[in-house]
Image 1 (tube, rainbow, N blue to C red):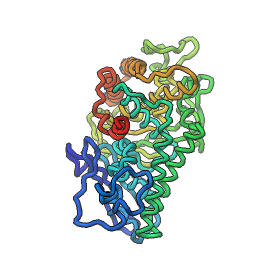
Image 2 (cartoon, rainbow, N blue to C red):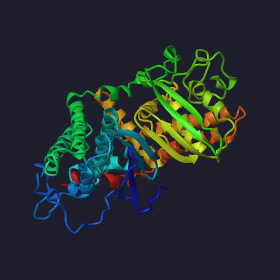
Image 3 (cartoon, rainbow, N blue to C red):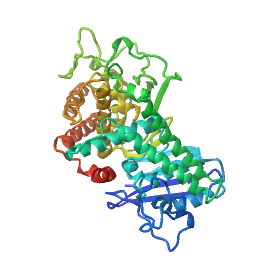
Length: 488
């Protein structure tokens, strides 16, 4: 658990480190259940924080009952900081949550944008509250594609929770466009509010960037142009295409890379890079002259595998992780490691057992290997999150499945909004993971690789249990704003 955390709070620490050596940390302390921001009240607040100052035209709050704007009160210190001259245009940002550490060198306005976004959606603003769950699963410096994917899946999870209460769900996303139009309105008025403070400040630039994201999502919705997101759910995209298996240069500019680095004790760091084709997300393997016998499809073949041994000699998942198994064959699961992951979007780091890092990497590789069963998880590959917790995995997996059903409905077929087949999917994944453990016992490896697969299997079982037992109450508190709207 990150320093400053306890069971009652959920803290995100934003640390800014400038080239001249100056540093500044913004702790965002929230209630762990509701994500309400916990801040000490001040004796007085500046005029620009009052509700009547450039009040949003769609704000439902009564000025007689609410003297101050909830967002303005929460971000006052952030705005004060970014109104001051900054030591440089760029800054190293480190974000610590109870589960992850992210880092990246970005422009100061981008750091302000990411920071303000968390404050605004957890401030208590009745309009921005709809995005509160995304603060619990905060992803700094998200790209437009990541934001679109996360926003739509987050909304669909809210609709699923609403449907469980036997209320009408908006499966067509009709109200999602309205929701983001309202968010655009808030951002527009907040820009005007910040101009009361200063005409030139990074907080203002950050709000313009936030508004651009809202506009982008609205544009996608209005044109039904989820082209990139929708492609992740195309059947042809997810299935194994043996005629188009990817072999080639791992240094191609057309590849997406995930560089994992393991630092164990006093040993030299061990690096392993996973390359994926940027369009298909298929694993890009360097061509090999030969493969070990345990990678053959007939070796401990998964009982639910649809591939024909007469046509396919090697198991795609086995050939995918072959190098990983060899690379980590001498590592035991109990060994502690400092694990870093470098991507184009951001860097991740954590101090964990080697098993956790290997598990994350194997999950990424196996889902993109061409396995026809694990390939259904390929949308999660595009949004790969190393070291995901149980709660994050459940949230991401349900969101992925509901988003897939949205595209099923859009194609004119019958969607599974009740998640009846969702548990079947993870039951199939359980079978693959168990069979793969049996396959690995055919070779001499230490237990880190086996335990990495067991960890993946535990995640699959956790997801099946969560849905089958209806054990999703811990998510409902995060979606309170959606329920409040339904109860009006």
